[in-house]
Amino acid sequence: MNIRNLLAAGALAVGLSMAGGQALALDNGSFETLDFSGWTTNGFLSVVGSAGSSQGANYTATDGDVFARLDAGVGEGIFTTLSQTFTLLTAGTLSGDAAFLAFDYMPYDDDSYVRIFDINTSQTVFSASVGSVGDYGATGWTHFSANLGPGQYTLEAGVRNNGDNSMSSALLVDNVALQAGAVPEPGAWALMIMGFGGVGAMVRRRRMILA
Image (cartoon, rainbow, N blue to C red; front, side):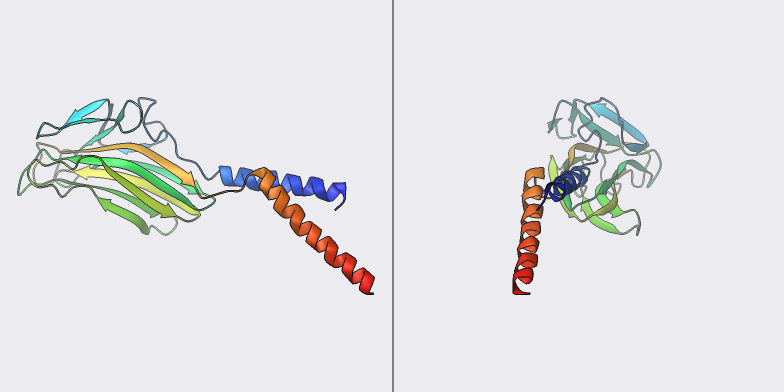
């Protein structure tokens, strides 16, 4: 390979590596900005350092110092929601922690969820119920994880009040992060491309000799 081909291979390697790095596109996943920068919100939300359940359990952040608290909306079936849209250029994994704190009882048990849907098809590709705890129950922190292919997605978490307008339950969310699939380093890309180029040069030389 001549110097021009080597430089072209290096430039392509850097470009491919940068494309892989752009797969990580989630903002403020642990709410350490002390607000909801990067997120879309609806309803009653706050950034807190601790929370308590009806049974006396105390919750602290699973990452950093704070986490998001979503309180069920006023009105039957009205969700309080937290969401963020992101793009994956390569396969990746989205993960996080959630907990449901029930402050209600039968027949008014509230519920909550975490889901991921494809924004182009509106199809739900991951869903987790975080709310079957019975009267005044709580789940504790629950880790969720979803493997995703390249595409555009929305992560959404929600909690609602069922049947009455008081004693609203809460959903806690923290440590939301994207991890891209394995992407070769620039040096590895360059070696791979130069290797392919070398094989091609050998094939061309062999053909010339045989001719």
